[in-house]
Length: 468
Ligand SMILES: [Zn+2]
Image 1 (cartoon, protein in one colour):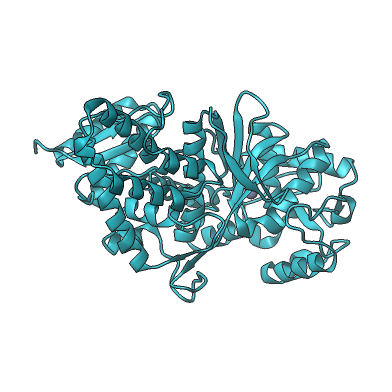
Image 2 (tube, rainbow, N blue to C red; image 1 turned 180 degrees about the vertical axis):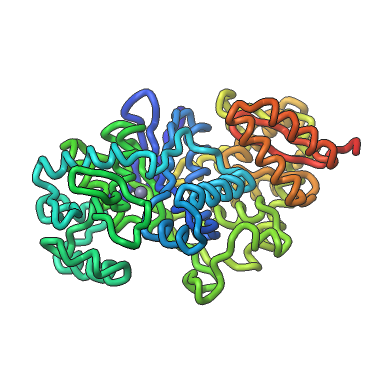
């Protein structure tokens, strides 16, 4: 096993990450499924994916939970706009999210709990908090009393007046009507009393009909699937305050135990030097990028190639550069194609050639340094001159890094037609549901269109059939 070090937002230091038990438990804040995820969201999910891959390669045994937020103000509002039930509406965007993740070669989490399916767990937690005096009911809603939790602010260093101003700001942005009943402006909502605009989207609770606030779902589901203390929790830096701060308060007030040992935050994505916003029309989705003629692999490369703690400026030039870098890496792969790819992580790798590149990943997940070292090494060695044994060693290292970075490095950059991809996605879904008859039927359809699907353990790929 190799040690991985990462910056810990909680201690403000780079530290070795370690499992507290058999598995290394990981929680990622997942998408709110009311629209398509954009490149900024995917920067976070892709960095998290590289993290999981590196953990596997390094010999940690990660067990990953990533939630789906399928009940909140936005999902309710937008489902009503289009006249769909909340569950149908969120299912649609969950499927799109899964399809995008598949294309971007993001490994599925081990569990993917949905907030609307864990209302009971959230209510139970809120009851405990009320019982312990950390939360109070007011007009059918329940609030967390921030002043009762001394450690509040430990993660984000937000405190005192700053906290109040920020809370008021974000409350103002959301809905002032929600804010009247709390004792203190910085208190946050755990349970929201049913409002006329909620339609059918409410549940029964000890405080009357309503629905959970957003923050509580992550605490309740993380603890259900990963235990009271989680080894590592990650998310975009925008979630550090108030979301993650609130998660700590709720969880620790409930259990009296540390909620998370290692906090990781991924910096912002800018687009063409500007913040992403609807009004600027720069919230690109994967489809936008594909329509511009780039592969998901190019987008993946582009979004992971900056250090995760630095903001990344996303541009079309950056995508072109990513495409060129991928072509080089694909060539290296072709030179080594006589060797089959190792089955990571079951096959241990000895590092003789690319140890510097791997070492960069283990050192605060420095992907740009890893890539730099990789290119430098290939620039310095004449692979053709290597004997079979050395070449085989190099191949093992190269394929291990390819796995860690999650790059497909497909030989020709043939873009997969939308309908073939849709069939392949549907087939994978059917296979996951153990509906093998449907999966086989879809495979035949894909093959009839001149394409092949290759299944790996946790994902699949589609390639052009040579015999067609
Ligand atoms: Zn969360």
